[in-house]
Image (cartoon, rainbow, N blue to C red; front, side):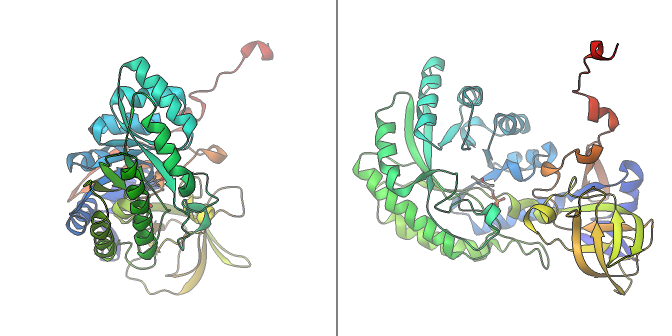
Length: 420
Ligand SMILES: *Cc1c(COP(=O)(O)O)cnc(C)c1O
């Protein structure tokens, strides 16, 4: 869906320059077709599982409406994400409210919306119980299990390590469910796990499923009827080449482990999965404009998007493919560092990239920017957040307008008496 037509990057049938003329730069541009292709491939490979879309990866309402329409559940991490999910058409009973630090207000919002909770601590269990009884509701819960698994990924996105802040350790989990059985207004009905993100090897997922069934067999012994085992998200994509997730390479071993596990227990829980990145990373390109080019110790291209717009390279040393959007047919000639406009030396979008000769006024395309892209952007250095666009065939829609400087001050209040 990202093609080169006469040297110019097109998103589906749209020339990126037509979009930039309307939105300015930087701008995130998403292909509807790619999103739908990912959904199809996920559903085909994982036809034995129920998918919940991980809202934190990208909470653009138009995209979320696509997932809601495709009957996905939603994995939310805050009352804000819950609000966005309900607004997009996700049903409360298909929403799992996650998180290691939920406020009473957030819990109340979730209870009223009829969601299920992934419970991170006994303190939280009691809060949910109290609030559910005040609201006259019964709440289905899973505990978040810390499975003590070390997948090969960046340490900042490995969430199932023994030392991680998430969940309860395996040796405390059975006691936690025992307590839940005796706690009013909560119904323990699932197990929740999530081992991390951008994981390319399937074996940690298989290990995770085996550990969930170890717990499931013990839970059956204390009389818990399991409705779902949620293995979380984390399926990695190929950032080096095409940005795609090979869903089938995960699905086959996962299915085998799940079916083997089912033979160990009486109940017939559903398998839930929570993909985020794998569904949307490759749907989106970030376009930035070149403000200047200079030879220093390195060849630097200075563009108008930095870690305020796309945090991943600075935060996770992430690699994103980069091209020159208006010189797609030119041969690579030089090696460049692509630098953002932020007043920090770590503000580099790409290092040592071979690109065609770049000039001031050119446009840089940063691919696979659909997951953990706009959602992590900030106004640092007084830079308003940029626009988002959805392309559908030969049409495009501005799905989020760019902020202006007015947005930098919208919530600020100056105590005027101090300056009289
Ligand atoms: C972040 C997260 C996900 C999604 O992870 P991806 O790597 O984007 O698939 C799913 N579940 C939980 C609990 C998460 O924290």
